[in-house]
Image (cartoon, rainbow, N blue to C red; front, side):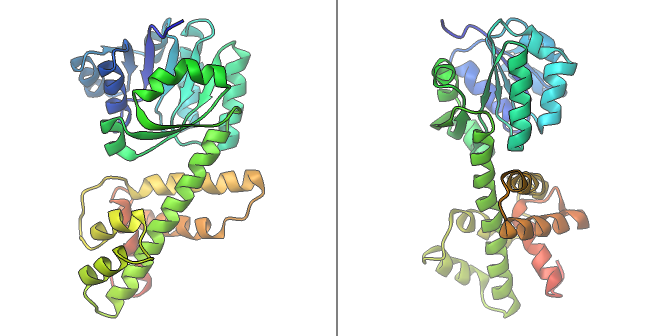
Amino acid sequence: MALSRLAFVGLGAMGLPMAINLVAAGFPVHGYDLRPESRKALETAGGTAAETPIRAADGADALLLMVVNVAQAETVLFTEGALDALAPDGIVVLMATCPPLAVEHLAERVAARGRRFVDAPVSGGVVGAQAAKLTIMAAAPAETLRFLRPVLDALGDRIFHVGERAGQGATVKAVNQLLCGVHIAAAAEALALAGRVGVDLDVVLEILSGSSAASWMLGDRGPRMLEDMPPVTSAVDIFVKDLGIVLEAGRGAGAALPLAALAHQLFVSTSGRGDGTADDSQVIRAYRLLNGDGA
């Protein structure tokens, strides 16, 4: 049986290009978002705009959720009634970054209503979403994943089956975000030290980027750390949320995560002083304040 209709809820910075890529791949997509302009953009791209989540999900074979958190997913599925509107044996695909235990509990509630569940968080940001080059970490029974694979292939170029149980995809995404957050904080600490002693930061960045100290985050965020107001590709508050999820995953697994906890506090302090919507590279401002160098 082929997928004949998709529902997509959450047409934000990543969700909208993802839904548009599904349309471009030939899938009939019915999309919903609170913002009328997002629904209009999907319609302009050839999709169908729905006025409510339940209308988007009506008769759909799969419902993709690119929402902020599990609470929003629960509202869409249960309060708004989208789950019961899905086709019998329809699939709920949660693609947002969420705590593993919360994902497990959500999957149990979905299964109790006779629908299938795929835990499939993504990595790659807005750029990856636009280019259909996301990394997708999917946890679901192999048969369910095979059925959904054409959809995932239209969204990403690196699809991994990380396990059969809901929550395993969320855990892998938490591990990814742990490293991302710590790497950004470490790069900020290094460049703040170099700036403190007055060396040319452009030269330092060039040296580090070509040495064993290099990391993907240093190469991507480092140049923006040298700017006062860089364009926002990922906000500080995203890592406040994501590292919070990492710490929750650690508590659930009984695992100590001291580096993640420290990085989280640096992002929290940056957000707390009013920079939550700034580019996440600006966590370097926390170090400048700690050092008495201003922001």
